[in-house]
Image 1 (cartoon, rainbow, N blue to C red):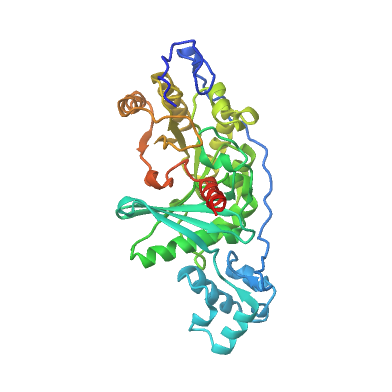
Image 2: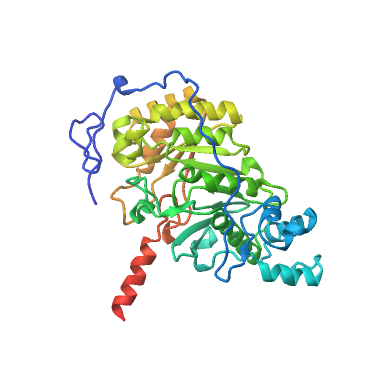
Length: 410
């Protein structure tokens, strides 16, 4: 789609969003006071799944939860469950017979009653110079989900999916083309991490990694699996990942933000803002009609005060849509008021969205306009564009179309 960018002062509707741009100081919306929002409760624990043969799957359970799961571990001392957990999560071992510090008869008993296999990897795609590796997993019900390993020298990040599909219909996001789908279980979330870690070992990638819940789906719409997943990711007898290495991204669900703040896990939070006026954000992200971003700001303030962790505002730059100097000034004002960081993101084109990335010179002007006001601004250029593994590009729709085309050609 080759539409020229709009003059920000023009009253001509934007060809993509159908909106008139709002310019000038009258468009600047300041966050109001932050009253104490109402909280909600999140149930503890996770459901215990079984594999096709009826064995209880221990994957996704903490050592303590393993003791309560049906099977021989319930009658054994707690240290046995801790042994199994260290093998599964610390070493990525799914075969009980390979857990050599456990007696052979018990290993056979564990094999009969339990399973620990991650979801199978259907395909693996590598970007140039291994800067990104995209994993496609097939879940037990046949659905497909993706995860990405972002590899930038010594720094590596695993981008996880929390849902198979997404119901929030953001105009720029490829996952929205999949439709609502369903929530992933704790086992399905942790399975992604273990599969990616195994590939890192196979590729001899040494050192730690970060975790970001920025793949397919809205993490906070799946709190009943997200909270237990975070516990397991951070537990010493789980995956032992530091809280500052884990970031959860959200479209802005205020009550769920508060619930996460009040939970027993601590984690970084990123808010997908992507517009500086309520009208524009509602067009780009329909959830804004239900939860205007000013309402979300109150929840973010509560989160920062409760968790003592600075929130990041994520802002995707779309040419002619949200990239004017006025947008930069409003965004800087929000960041200053909230005392949070801003992460600017270059748009990654894909077949499901008509937008274009902002010109590099305009990006630079946008950053310069924010610099004197904003506490911290970074510009993110995503890896893996060429394999549709970059920010906003994850969708199994492409794979499903390929499979349908192959069947039609048979």
